Image 1 (cartoon, rainbow, N blue to C red):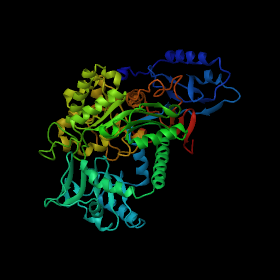
Image 2 (cartoon, rainbow, N blue to C red):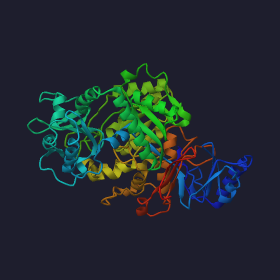
Image 3 (cartoon, one colour):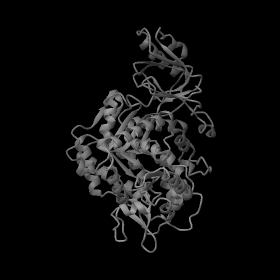
Image 4 (tube, rainbow, N blue to C red):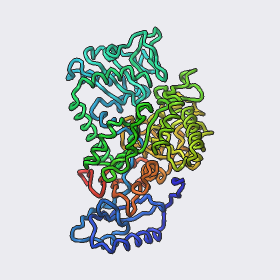
Length: 579
């Protein structure tokens, strides 16, 4: 597999040979557009080469080598950027996130840093003061396992809606769980949704109820549709222009947030066809500021007959691609939605949620085969991962296609039975993982799974790599902050930033492996390794300049790393004001 390429520190001789080849190929050109000099350049090429300078023309890298060699290409119109001895690497590729969702999270209430239920109630109360009666108040990012206070009245750690409802009598409130697999609603929202004591719990979901049978306000997995449908009805009351304008504002916010954090490409893990077409249009009009690769997310029945124009490859001169189809077969561990082989340790007799049937899984797989699309399946629990691997294996056999050639993906792959770890490499299935999820979830994983299951199969990046699988990295933004530095830190330390809690550190990756997971591995997982993921002649000039050398700085210094410059197509997309 591609990720089995050895990542070593290479001799000056190898670098010199590479630089000579690059330099010689450029001598015919009278000048170049841009030369970035005086850097510590980590190319992430097949030799893990180091260099000092990069020459760029027409948005592509044309040479890499020493300062002296590349300055020989300078012409009258050549711009020169002095990197000041700082670390240069390929731009970070977000391997799994939700791009429109990130934009929405920057518009609505954000609870990623909230540490108590009261803090959330207070934030909603402040929003109520400026909201019009009947206007929905939306928030996201809360997680009951990360609150520092203990709720006297709770069900499975979830609060009762009473305090939230008391401060928002005239506004429906919907607060999405950090995982995205649950939401909390106030009394007004539940009333609009038509919820009563007689409302049936939908398959693959849960209306969390008190001992006397009353809904406390928490809706898990498929039960979220009860409240979301009511919100969708409200949105239909808004004008098309209002909806469109808010969406575009969210996209602009998401772009800005990514670029200032060094993300040059973003793999969107599931958007509607309407959103896909909106993003494609932005790319074709030259209005996208970073590169997007997207998955379509709809029911199979809806997609039938609508995929004739897909996949879309490199629209807008390489700024937009849509070649994946997304399906979720289970939920999240934090909201008891991960589908397990054995019951939860802290919820006896409960195995989690199977949110899509195996029949739907197989139908979606056939759809991907028929339309030349990658299949990208959300699976978190060990039962979910096994079911997906079984389905993939059967599909490869029935179709006569070679699994590794298809590059199908399991999104998250968080908890895997040890027997299934080798199957990722054997089948050519990509483990699309998120480093920061490990440390973010660490406080409750052992509580949910027990020590043995957590140590043997939870967030086992190293075991997957050693078995020969391709492992990618990301943040699942807006579930987590889109910041790749914090996810990189989690990947190489398995340690929480706030408390220092360590989570089975034998699974930590090396610095080289972690950078690879955020660059070339993600490029490979999107069939884009020929144009991005490393700094080599012919590839896009997408790069970042960092204040720390991620290969050599101390663990503590990783978190101090600043993004000094983000460059896309050889153009500065973000620059720190002090650089």
